[in-house]
Amino acid sequence: MMVEKAFLGCLMKASYLIKDTVIRPEQLAETRNREIMQRMIEFTQCGKGIDLITMSMLENLESYGGISYFSELQAHADIEKFNEIEDLILDAWKEREKKNILILAARNDWEINKVISELDKINEIKVDDHNSITEALAEMYEAPWQEQELFTSATTGIKNLDAMMRGFHDGEVTILAARPSMGKTDVMLHFAKSAGWAGYLPIIFSLEMPEKLITSRLIASTGGINRAKMQNPNQLLSPNQKNKWQDVLGYLNETRIQIFDGPGQTVPEMRAKTRKMIHQFPKQKPIIFIDYLTLIATNQFYGGNSHLQVTEISRSLKLMAKEFSCPVVCLAQLNRNVESRANKRPMMSDIRESGSVEQDADIIVFLYREKYYDRSEGNPLLEFIVCKNRNGQVGTVMAKYNECTGRIEDLPE
Image (tube, rainbow, N blue to C red; front, side):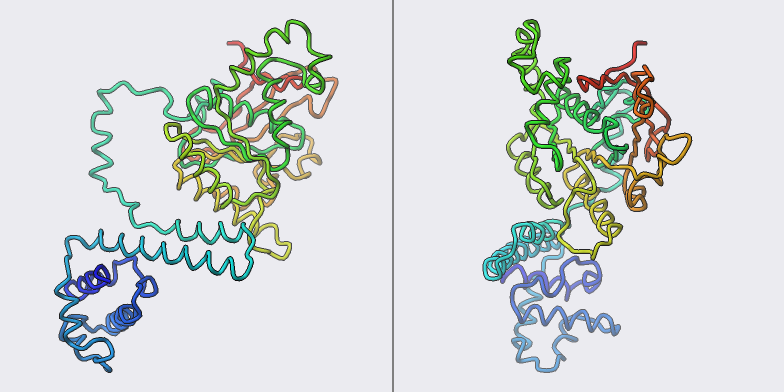
């Protein structure tokens, strides 16, 4: 392959490139070229050069094509285009690897999850993630003289929470954690609707609740309808609610929310589905919602060690947020320790398998309601306790929460 000859020729002409290149010998297509690069690495490790004279002293020189082949390699060298040559080699390797994976999958009857995971590993390898400070500063040069938008992020739909968190930012992972039935799913759906109306593409991976129930909740909270009535709208809705029904559905449709409700989805599957949505809606920035953390499946069996499993998932969520340059919001359950305390407001240690989650998440928000623990309490307030915010403030924000409809609103000023 001509591009491999150019690559090896560059290494011979500028030996420092052997230490800088991202290409590994096994990523070259031709066996002879793989072996030559391996010898180059060994020579460099021994402090030897890898120029034409040194390479001509190889044992079994003729098996590599003799001195004429090494002269040919050097003749193809183009150091100025070395980065482009690397990209071409990497692209060709990825294509070969994809074909090999599909052949192995068919031969060994792999599950689809394993196929997607193996293909995703190939796509993670990149060489074009470089930005110089000069380019970064150039983008900021006019900032003091330009009107800046208040939010360049997906809104939470709650003014005071936006002020504290700056909304949901690209590449960041937000963990929304609470005890069961505290209102996590309603909050997630409120966030999704708000982001959708603001122009984002909300993608919901509901690993617990089926799509019909998600849709029912969205309609109830948007239309201010008691959820109990959604079980039989024909008989239970009032005439006024029926008259507004089409308007509610039309308004909700403007969010373009996408729902995937398959159980046991893996992060690679979510990435593949997100990619599909990005191609389908190229003009909208995605924002990903996952309900919830410990229901995400993994391709590896950790022998019942849930800590290792959550560690892998937590890391994968961060990689997904960076890969798509979009916000990822993941719900999480709190363990029962919170119930044994007098003050039942959550703490970081209450998150199940909290270590890796605490480390990888950019923002961690807890939900708390007094009414959850005292049903006689008339307080309709929902507390958003921001206990970690990598790039902003921490503190508590109050909002109004209607348990019957699932609607969440700002408090009156």
